[in-house]
Image 1 (cartoon, rainbow, N blue to C red):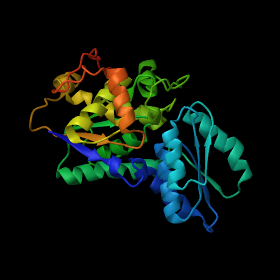
Image 2: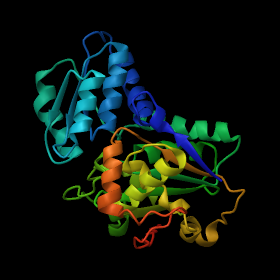
Image 3: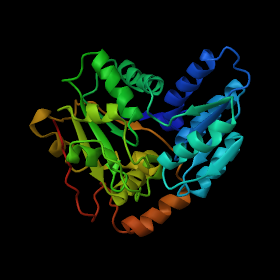
Image 4: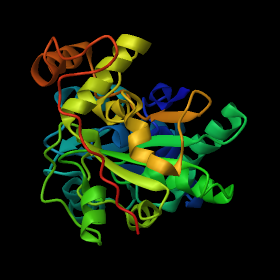
Length: 326
């Protein structure tokens, strides 16, 4: 049985409400005089929206620097959420972050940088999603499927798996789209690598280098790194819209195809048998970077009207999963 953990219904539209919110609370608590804090976030969209939402709730201003490749709709959402300023700079989140640290923060004594994923407070906030999954199921799941951008979500999930001593019991699939696959390429190289640029349309996953902690977690034997195309991610978005009446972005759609056509069993092989009693959880991590118009455009351009059939099969080539283990 496949369960959907609906973090697209979080106040800021993604799981980022958990980690970013926890980080902002922690930084505000540290300040003896917290009245003048100004938060600065580097983001592909979701982390920035979460930062603005959390900061605004606590009464603080928030500026977001977003890469130039971000869609206009995401920029508009940041303004609509109440951002103090939205600056488009750089080709990646890393370049946006560098701009904050080298240009903006030196001129603001009250400025506090909000990293998009690489901080223990963010991982601790994200860990609540795995705690809730276990509580809501009443037991551990057999498989957890999650997207990886910089790795903050994966880190939180793995943190709880370790706490509960489920390391050998749960299979975790770390999903990326081709062109935003910094984790998979790092595993193949045997060391952390930095992508020259992001070429995937899943811009919310647009991180050129994952965290060191993510790289370490991903080398475990029960964590599998998988890369699918943007077209496969779009197929997943279409299937959720058709079957569950839910609009999600490509960062979520990439998780869906593995649950069709026996693909999941092929990935896991002899490590775990999947049947009707198995509990598979997809973390539906975000729903900001999506619209009906985008979905229909993907259907025409990436899928083709005839490619999505009633049972979820397509005429697209079936990708072969990449498993890299230490």
